Length: 81
Image 1 (cartoon, rainbow, N blue to C red):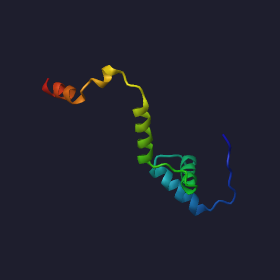
Image 2 (cartoon, rainbow, N blue to C red):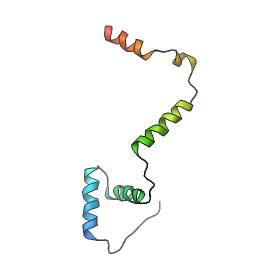
Image 3 (cartoon, rainbow, N blue to C red):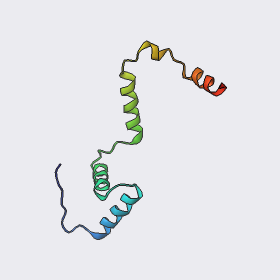
Image 4 (cartoon, helix red, strand yellow):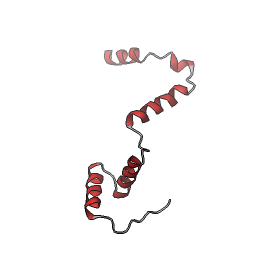
């Protein structure tokens, strides 16, 4: 993976990135990548990620036996026990 080194980086910006990284439970490197992606317009929202995942799931071939399962019925049976 390529390495990026920035000389004479402003201390106040570094502190902000460090604070946000801690708040988001990320490393400073991870947070910096997120911020750069956002700045370049490459950030994908969580809603878009979920939508893409659902589309991928819907494209999969599902066996007929799985289609025949009624989740509501299973939940009711479980609750009745």
